[in-house]
Amino acid sequence: MLLLPCKSRRHSSWRKVSGGRGAVLSSVSRRRQQEIHVRKGGWGTFVLLKEKNMLLTMEHTCKEKVRLFPNPERIDKVEESMENLEQVVRERNRAYFQLETGETGERPGKPSVNAFGLNYFHKMSEHLIPKWMNTAWKKKFVFNKPDPYVKTFLSLYREKLWSLKRKEANRQRSHVMHLLKRFPNLDKVALREQYPQVDLEKALRQGKSRGHHGQNTA
Image 1 (cartoon, rainbow, N blue to C red):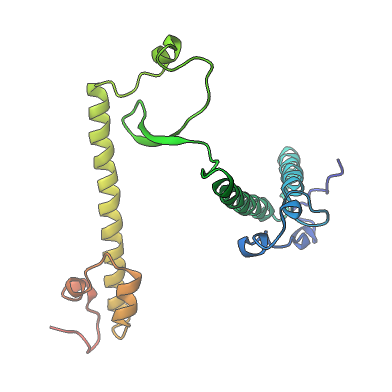
Image 2 (image 1 turned 90 degrees about the vertical axis):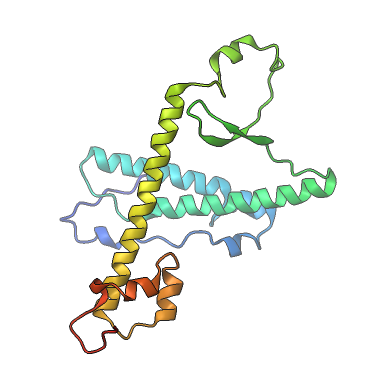
């Protein structure tokens, strides 16, 4: 595989490595199925996979040589393009299977609870032995078993989530009061739309939202 040379910071042309935009979802949905999978000279499933492998190899080579990897956002563009392609292909497959068989054709699953007591979506898979006969699986995966440590973990986890939510609300309220202090003529409707969780009337009555100007409200 032919790799591009890694550019150092002292090299004057290391910033000139440019790449095109990723595959937009609107443009991918207009392509045919064959063009999505194999498309020479553009983006396709196999073309993007080859491009991603090449970029990751270049990045690893640059790290080994202690060089700067030129234009690293190319990896993000390739991953975004692959996600858009996968979304379009799955939508078409679901439409085809619903028309032919009445089912989505997706991998079946159900909401479940893991060993830590957290909810997740479990994707089912085929097994040679039924679940009620598979003793080795039952010993390995013991779920929904009452455990005092799990209850303690869940209580502390919920407390942490609530603390993060409270800190985010306080951060937004402080930011809104700071904006009102600096810009008294700020559009209140736009501010309420951008920060819907903040009580704007309560923030206006706070002393922190009053600046050194003549437009303070009582």
